[in-house]
Length: 299
Image (cartoon, rainbow, N blue to C red; front, side, top):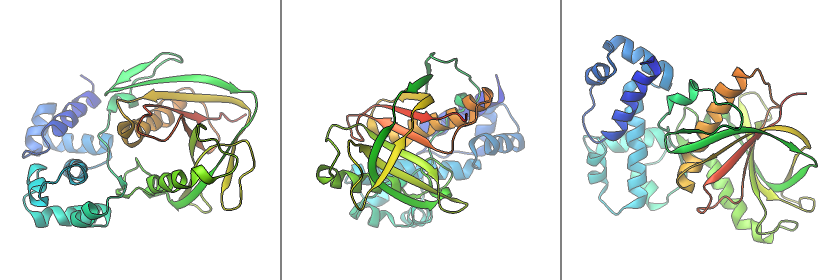
């Protein structure tokens, strides 16, 4: 068994037993490693220390239950492995900047630390050959765009550590941006209601910042108050993937696909790309389960 497989075994075990006591010595024994090497290897591959990872995954489970059930907050805290209401509240506020009571009263999108699928870092799929893992299907192909495609939408800018799917938790401002765009979409000139939608992450105005565009394909110039993004004609590497539902598509599968594309597939093919990645889907809606990430190789 490879080292990453030993760690993935314990990651899967943690996910199945988040509500129970999880001791590092037992996880290390499951992995067949000493506690020292287990913690060292876990931190290296998962990018978080074991106990911090467990806390973040418990918070992810708890946030789902806070918005999806009417149970008492104390009951949710105990069901997700926290010892008291106070411990849970302190951890939740530290991670997301608001208390469980505030979140339940006015739900917002949250950046969660997703369960990793380490296989994506060590398996290199050939072009046009689907890779199936962790409830998602992923495939990398090449496409040529014969003419530019124009999109109209809104843009936000924030510190890069706040990008969803990264190593930080907090409020997901991308989700809020999509809500704002969808509220405006019916009244934006030049956009059809069935237009394909696209999100684009690209460099910000200063080092350590990024911008994100959320919009839809347009047949006219962007009106005042909105931005235009043009997907230039040319060759692209396209990573297509699907998940069981829209929530898993945008909150989990997207970030696994991005990491696979940028940290495994492109480096192993010695391909450098322009500094943006475009996410294209039929619509940013609950019915959507398929997405494509487009990147453009440097000439």
